[in-house]
Length: 333
Image (cartoon, rainbow, N blue to C red; front, side, top):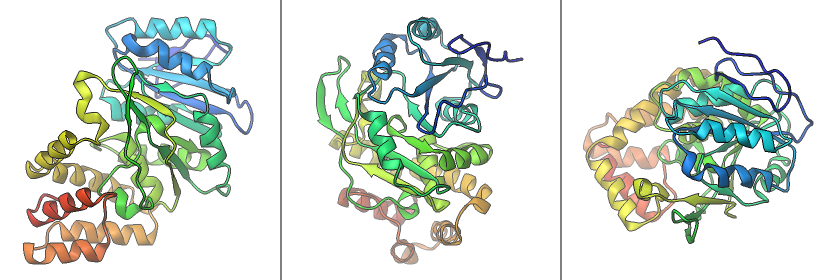
């Protein structure tokens, strides 16, 4: 489909993520919010209004709709008419949420200083963008940096239930190979990380999730991953995504079952294949770690646990590391 070009600030575009309108550069602290939309009408308004409540006011919004059958796109148009911020609506690739987000990252263009990823049904607390930018301000120019953090897990009516787990171990590529520690709905990228994400998106075919990929590619390329223990997103849990919070005993048992069925190994294969394709973006140390990880997956059982220790792979909790060792033992890594 041929896309339209952007007409004026705050007029709506229904083009393609591959050919977005041109966003203006509104200063060194401008943040483009990237939302992937699909049948999200039910909780969309509260997410949109939480953007307007941000203490950091210098933002614009790009929404990529992946073929919604509800009136979510119309709600985006209504929101655009009510705000003085720049709002762009794109037609998504129709290939699932991960590809939609990866193409959104490319749609951000070459000039915006920061990009924040957003789900369609959460609520951002007012300091979300401002706090992320303060963390990212400490990163040297030219170094890729990815900010991510915890969430407040809520029920469908946004009643707080608990906070997501606080991870204490440092983020690293050796962790990223076997675990994603930050939800995409918390992530903010600086310009260098956005450049990296745009350049490597074409290698990310078949990846499990965009947020896991971003953690892997930024840490693997020598970038800085900032994990914020202060939750600034109200993460709405639905009946359909009760496992999504990833922090309950039920979720742990579900993950263990996936490991034993070979799902974890399949995910690692998909991610490793993408990282191999993008290996020229990785540091020599990360390339070596990736190669050793690939080798250990093919070791005989008597060598696998020792190789796991030697490579230095780790998850963030004791329970997670037990599951990792079981995965290695039963050739499910």
